[in-house]
Image 1: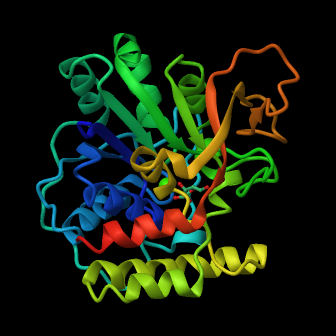
Image 2 (image 1 turned 180 degrees about the vertical axis):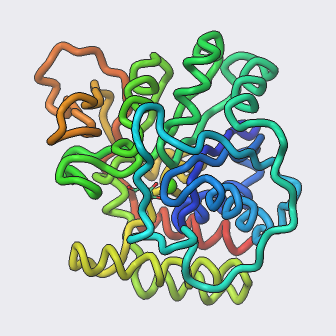
Length: 313
Ligand code: BDR
Ligand code: CA
């Protein structure tokens, strides 16, 4: 099968960085048409810079990186330095990137790419707040039908929330954008906390990254070490979830994942449950299914895939 053409929409973030590395290491499965940065874990000036740092680390400085929206559609930006550190990529010291940031705005790149490529051949992989994608859909509704699929990290149902008691970070930061994307009618695969909280790092898994004996292996091990402390303290778990690479792993090996086709709606009105992904897991409404909502993962297979692919870089 020809590799799938993808756009990664991201707010790096250590786990975003691992997702980008996995995609860049897997050219037989995915062709990365571009990386579009959005404000999220840290402000846009840092996420676009971090995206370039990661491309250089992968040895792929020709990757096209675009800066997009610097604030959610209707709200003030909420960031997550408490998880990812001040730079978003805290851990080891990283040099500033020398590869260029593209002049074009990320939203224009998304629109132009979907109009240029044959309809139904471009997949969007959002792993941050959905502001860029929703803005593109609002500005150019003609592109919506041209999207092959959206495979995103966001939301939660059984795991409820990580930034509020009922909301996951990516959806909470821009619930209005999420509502647009979940309501667009595009085939949607969602990696919620319910699955990413089963994709935990362990000492052995981090040791496997370090054992690669490469700069990428050392860096991923150091990032996951840093990233871990927050979740381990919070959940008392052995390791931390690598949320965002689940999206790319799904594109490479969908058989690692299992979920249900269900209806998911986004709460935008309630102060108490803002950004909640109201997932009809038990199919108790007649609201039509709009999402393949993933719940289970073969975590060992996922970490094997990561170790094998990242070792190539
Ligand atoms: C999501 O929020 C971010 O902090 C991570 O990068 C991930 O995309 C998890 O809730
Ligand atoms: Ca992210």
